[in-house]
Length: 327
Image 1 (cartoon, rainbow, N blue to C red):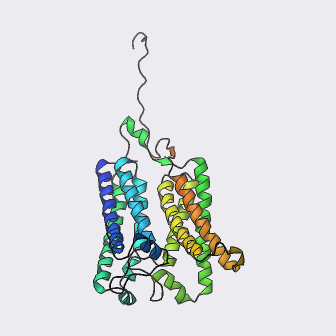
Image 2: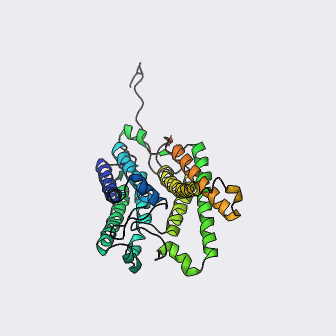
Image 3: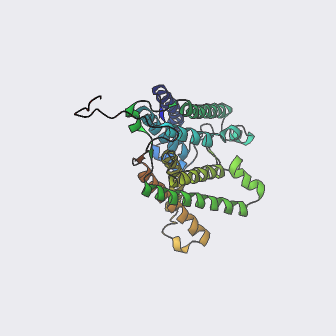
């Protein structure tokens, strides 16, 4: 299936709007910190959160979402087969922004930001969710079956066989690692304390636009798992959704690696307790897996042979050079 021109333009506009929302918040935070490196330190947990009257609001995931929106907007304008990319952008938007509805409405969040700033963030969360739904509707309603001969050459690409196997292994392993650490967190904490990882609480350091850590880990694991099985079955959605999952894996691992390097955990890996060693190795694996997946899945895949459920049009053969009698 290909997208109509109107759907492609609408999808690009929706992605541009989402990018403007995220970009505005990042720009606002850049005006608060002394230099861009200070914002990066805040995103990785090494810096302060601004002042009481002007707290920093964004997270590393906001930067990753900005990259997704800009890339998908360009793909929608450039390619008529960007429906799966629009779906991937819509899904990750809904998954990451949904907790903001209850986090920003919580009484404890009022202790970290003014009511005006909190309401602005809540309105932006609602707007992002609406735009995310709009992306899904655009991808579903704007598709059409190829009608001209040239359309059959512009069908979506699927991951190549070698890339599919690599994506299945790395995405599946990434999902398993994240799930294992969530199980570990559940066994080491009481029920209500563990639920705070998904709902947020006053003692969980969470910026205005932040996603609760347990929720973010679950979203990343689910996206990685779905992409992994999609890759092994050469599904069309495996490439864009896999790229989004790989980006989230890279962000999760990169944040941890930055923490490990700052505290010399990598250099002292052999001296650490077993649990800390596994944690550092998990961060290193997530970073490496995310980077490798981005490089592998960004390559053009194999062209789809025909379309499921549609019969490629057949044209009569050309007349012979010497027509027989009665031709």
